[in-house]
Length: 529
Image (cartoon, rainbow, N blue to C red; front, side, top):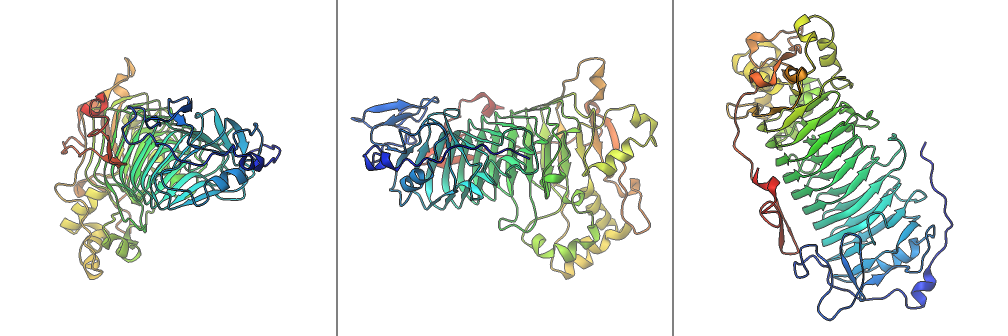
């Protein structure tokens, strides 16, 4: 059980009454007028102080409880400062660690910047808060959160919904101590938003995802560290997302791309995951729901998500597998129920299978030494059963594809097994076009680099759970195909040897400036890969 810190609850309204809370607004520093680092300060303004990241704070900012001391409760001062906030306001939090006993909700803010003095210099402790979210921004545009830490949120750290333009930078969300089920769920949590820029952040201890973007468009997630969460970085049902130059270490799963059924935004696509360091993501999974099924020891997992490109990453020392590419059937194996149970969802464009995933030019080393997790239990069980002595001599696949999408399509085309009704007449009767894996819908893995030294060089393998050729499949008494792990060395390119078109880069338009590989990072080395 997480121990909640106890501090005195001292309100600092006297600072407001004495005029120390200065009203006004300065340049938010995000418009490109004040240098690459986005420091604030229009001409004629005096800079009071700069944050540890170099963001300059002018004297015209709104200073919240500037005389507060570490341990004080600044809830009322903070709530008052953000009540009916004016456009383009710059709100500055004090230096130290402070208690906040209620969730802070901001509605329809425009151009708001909230800053502390640094990611370790301003810490807001929500361990005694009555609200679910530490910060929640509802609606609005052009919002920046920076240079502060949010600790021990009851549920989520910083959540945004329906915001057009959200920039979170040099910000931490932390649940201290061991990774436990009763930690908060999401750390940094933009949802149903557009133009999302998340950079230079740190997330630790989330029982769901440390850095998460869901049901959103136009996303750049770069230069962050996700450590000791269930999911380090997750992109869910989102479109046009670039995830690069991040570090994912010590999580249950490093980086995730998911499309889940039944959401308002039915599916995502054009997700690029590149130039990340993804290593030793071996924490026990204490999460709930779908993320709770992520096998601990997984570097990257793509679940029912299509149009995903994974390249030039360093993926090492993950106990189960470097990359798992899997359909939703691994979560819900009731294949024959899909036309009835998911017909409406599939009609909206979501599919339980995945398409157009391209894995290339990644360095993969020392993965698969201790595969585990309920999600892959049948596969791991079959692999370790000793039925195939040649497989027993090999390391569990570093690249693992379930193969069910292509097999189902081929079964439907040939009318084999118990699936003809799903991809044929039964689906048509429900108005569902269920043929998810056509001739151009390929899962490709090539030009990946075996990073193992000798003599372990030959132990980087590719595995396919279900053979894509129906003639090679075996079926149970009900006509359902049975998993059989086909495995070979990655360098042989026996499986998944194809090439996909490259995906387009994502870009974020924040306050009329372009961020990402076609904007401020145009000269970044990762963007030329």
